[in-house]
Image 1 (cartoon, rainbow, N blue to C red):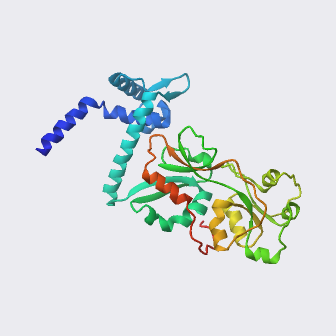
Image 2 (spheres, rainbow, N blue to C red; image 1 turned 120 degrees about the horizontal axis):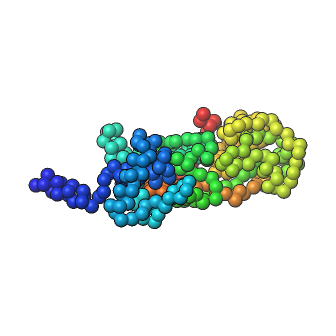
Image 3 (cartoon, one colour; image 1 turned 120 degrees about the vertical axis):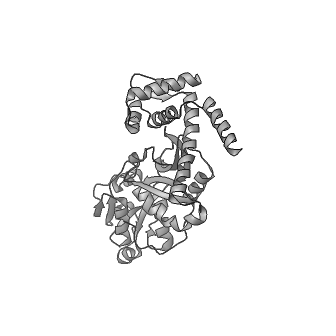
Length: 318
């Protein structure tokens, strides 16, 4: 009886659902926003992909793509179909992953920059199994925000204005930037009481990135002063190196509040008052189009927002 019901359902699906090949090719074109890239991903010709999409549009009687001279974009019907197919394929992929890995946990790919991963995610890993016991996290860490716009992530963290055309953005938190140093450095040096004194205090700088992060020069400019004679003890390509140098008592670094709060809570870094700059941009959790803002996504967002308990962290993971 069960086989008869399955066969009947299967025939019913075949009458309703067009070619699965066409649906898979449509998903690839919509995700990559390109017939050429989809053909390359699928290992077929562009003409074959175009033919499948045309047949699919004829079968359902709806135009799925608006075709321009050098670009394409989804129509309203295309957006609806893409959301349905992407969610369904995600569930199927998760099911295969559970079966092949022999685990009842679902893998979730979270993209972020190296700084966010090291300074915000790593200190929270201990609480992940309590927050999301059914999720196995895979971190896809990139150097800069510009690398994050990839279809391979389930979620990614970005710093910006929250307006991206490839997904829905959930606000995580706003930021503030202020000077930080170690207690050891503070014991050897006078507390800077003015911006002029701070400028000569032995600064630890990191290069500006596509993430919109500031250098000491731009930080002082935001404070309303242009100081040419900044005294640097060390300049780094990576922000995590500047923070590590501050932890080792080598000078004063710019502390991005949400990135260094666990160091401050643990007492390994000290915030120098009252200096502070509050950027206009903020951190967001971006859910790519075709993925649902479900309870797991909201739980991940909350997990990233909550402060960690103070622990004695002596260094940043490499």
